[in-house]
Length: 152
Length: 60
Image (cartoon, rainbow over the protein chains, first blue to last red):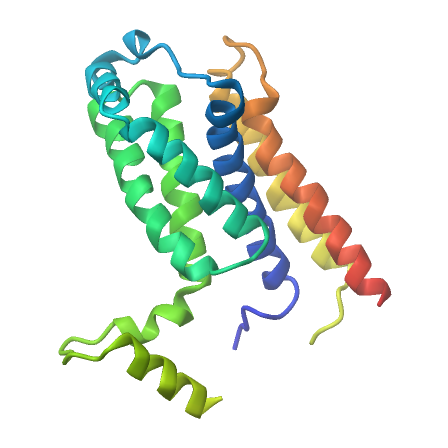
């Protein structure tokens, strides 16, 4: 059976993780350091949406979040958690790029986002196995931590 | 853990560099737009970091 923690898969996943980390960090830091905001008027149908996002301060929030999430992936800290948060951003970017403004270059951006986030979610999928319960009762976070400690 | 073999380096390199070429192709709209490190940097530099880490772990 293929083991995710064995070479070469471990390093393939490492490449993907660092790739996605750099991808997020360059996007976030471009805004955080250089205050760079793209010209939304050239973004086609997505432009007004991005403009409003920026006006209400949500665009800068996402950029700062990208820096935090990128750093989490780069330094290998809370990766499964970071990937779930990133999935929300991926859904939005992919929808805007693949459905709302499907220029060939945008189509690639949307596809790349889906591929990177999707394959990393699969690569770390073992951590989500407990989520996939068809019928789940209430289970407090601290109960889960206590049971996890007992198992290890 | 299984030892890192030359084939593993070849596999990672093949996938990473092929994908970098795909990124270069699409980000430049197949040569119509200028090539930017902003686009090709993440897949390429992450490959460099990964290979450096593999070499380090192989020597341990």
